[in-house]
Image (cartoon, rainbow, N blue to C red; front, side, top):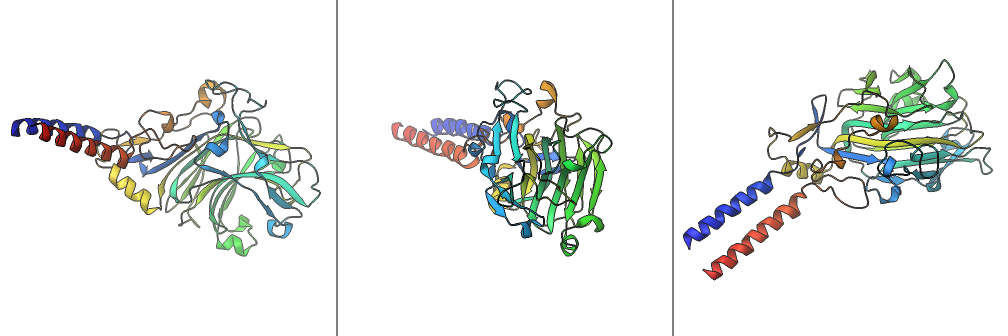
Length: 370
């Protein structure tokens, strides 16, 4: 009996050990040698309904002209958040099912609003525990004058990281992106960061309204680095946020002649191909999940480097950017997009518990038979 149980137990230990060899990237994802424990990835080119995504919440709210700090207010409506996936699930470029650029469309409606509120669109991540990370959005902004297209991280009005595109500023010789860190100083100046040292305007060497490009910011405790198509634009080291927050994609107008201008004379569309974020979580449960799954930090593939974008995500080849969440074993214990499912990677507690229970039951059966 001892021999049989020893043999069986040896098999069980081997089996359990194989389960402890978990998914790749179990300790996280690295960007320039910085390790991040969590990820968010959404492929909007193939997402037919954003409400089926675990990561995003379309916004529905109104803001008065006074609070919007413009001659007009804002009316964020779910109806202005439009999924327009590619016609074929096998393609990575081309027209969407509704025509035009494929991806998630954020609309600002054209014309003078009858109620003083300009219809706009905004989506925000459901997770608000993002504390330092690298965040990237593949976007094509509108060329219709009179809107502000914004990709930003937000905790509050004095801790905010912005990449903003003012379509009224685009012309044959000017294609700027506005890089902003909101701070207590900018709040004191009426949320005008221009003279605070955390506002920079960078001219891009491409026309952002004529194609998709990746916009990115890497946020660490000491700095925020801004990129376009993998090229470093600027580094800011003052007013760096210190609290956890969330990512927002927004397209709006309030008629302010010194910022968004507008409203646009016709409907304006900002289109998003993807959003990727690799970050640390401030949530204690997520931190505990990481400590449980990261059992061998030095093991092969325990950490995975995030591929860098070196060209604009236009065309079938370049638009097919890398997603860990589309790999078989790279997102264990991570929440990824697509209905309400978890990653197909190893589900830490349930899988391991199932193995233990099955083994105990099997031992009991053998004991009874012997």
